[in-house]
Length: 282
Image 1: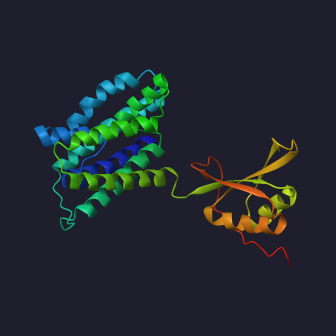
Image 2: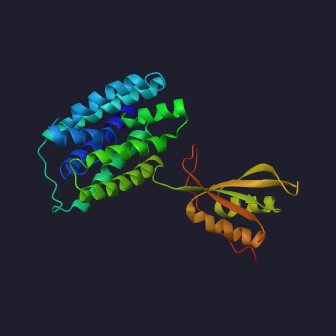
Image 3: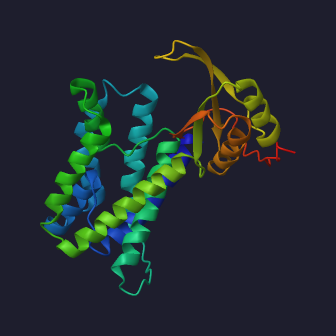
């Protein structure tokens, strides 16, 4: 199941890579960007370049990648190279009217959807992800920062074969790709966490459970200034339910303090239950 999902994800990514990036002279970050540079300058098949660059990277990452991740990474690298090789040799035409903006948007959608699916099932496509992880372990540098540095350098090198106009379209494609990766990884929904400090925590929690259909958790807290012990409510909500909780607080305790935080992932049952806040003043 996991290997099949990773293969499908790399197939989606490879299709966008060949049909939109290669066909419309759009650059890309990572190893894929290096393969596009070698293709533009020396006409080397990107599928071969992907494999050649990833072999030493896999040797580097063998020691710190877990066994399952290592296997999934090998599978992702090989399947991506195979898909790129196939799509270059399959005759197909997608008519977008020579519109580079549409090409950039579609490139971002396909690459983001494919990579997001691969990530969602625990795989990677290798490349600079391995180096970024190594720098995190050895130097303590965050993965995201290293990926940004690597991609920036590769995009700068890509100016050797693309003009500034196409580079701007490439940045649009990259932005769309990141949004799609987040969307696919999060399962197509967004979640918020809410921390509530109130003197009426029992009544607030009961109302949230009854009126919105969400459970709440008590966290034991203590005021740093006052030294007063308090029960802090933590509840996970859909974005649309935040306003309902605010309405509940405005009725039960207008002086309550609430903090809304982004939740990147929820493990466990989080069914999209919906409730309706009833007028508590009645």
